Amino acid sequence: MLLLRMMFGKLELWQWLLTAAVIVPCAVRDIRTKRINGHICLMGILAAFLIRERFLGEESIAILIDLLPGAVMYAVAFFSKERIGKGDALSLLFIGSVAGSATVLMSLFVSLTIAAVLSAILLALKKVKKDTKLPFIPFLSIGVIAGGLI
Image (cartoon, rainbow, N blue to C red; front, side, top):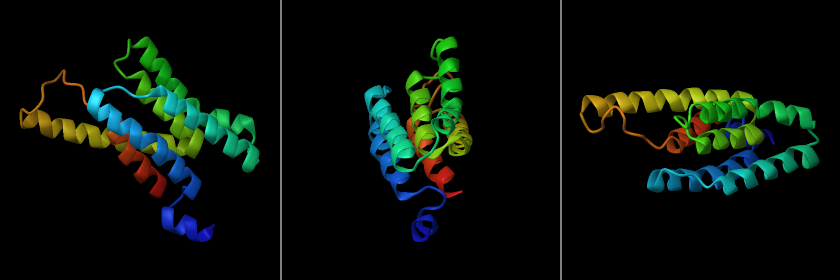
């Protein structure tokens, strides 16, 4: 286990594999269609909950606390009439269920920073307009990798 922690940072192998199995297909679909398959995220949340509770013996309340950042983002998506996509919020719920709230917050910070820098560059080069919607899950994928390594 120590070797895995040294190789993959603070996330364990099962967390990397489950995250990749869910986030990569979501990122590909987000790039192609600007939509996310919520069923994949929901199955990932259930798998993470099962692994953490049954196999790792974590308390259910701890897992539910890790879902709070994603739940807040989902509420923001709902009340803002999806200025932030519900699929993005569902992905954050998934990441919280797998890796915990600290990784969600770190991933969100990194991904928003990268998205802001890229958006500023694209706006300066006049490749996009102010109202252009960029897919967020690819940025979130990078944020999860960085957040898991930090």
